Image 1 (cartoon, helix red, strand yellow):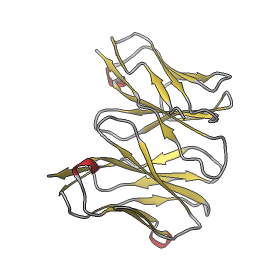
Image 2 (tube, rainbow over the protein chains, first blue to last red):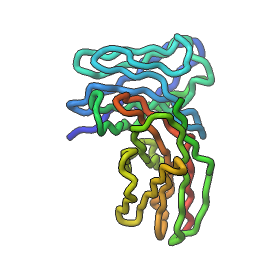
Image 3 (cartoon, chains in turn green, purple):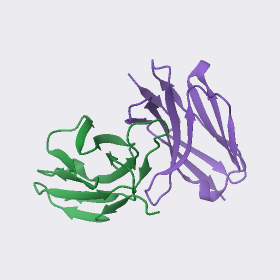
Image 4 (spheres, helix red, strand yellow):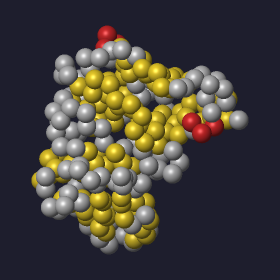
Length: 114
Length: 114
């Protein structure tokens, strides 16, 4: 069974640009989560999508947005990039609301903003 | 509010030593789930274990063991006879019952030296 996949693996952008990151969940999973992990820091929760809807949002500015498609894949968009947006962006997926819903993570997209 | 605290930022041990990673959580919920994840240098988080709040039985899996104590709101993780391959950042997380959002601790970086 394929795991969570993310693309691209690495990305270099300059300040002010826009970026789109992509995530494909494990087959059967309907929930997708996005996290930001800046260098040396912990996981900061960004967004949670389930069944195409945004369920919860972390404490990030509106220039961080995303969506989930009917096939449950997801995109994370970041507009007007700032230097501090440089980080590893991790996507995770899980089954919908239920009991044993551990999240399974993808390999991440490393974004560098110059 | 939910909160997970991993007070140990970084731990260094010599191979074959035992090491315990601490995790303390806060929640007013009576039903919840606790998790441990491992993040090796490659970046992808690997799920290690899930515990339910109503099951305080400790668990052992090879060199790994987990001690869950509701009385002290702790869910500690012990690695016996540590190996260099155990070097990683370890995250503890809390999830509320029937709400898929995870609350991660800040992580503990474990360095196992040969």
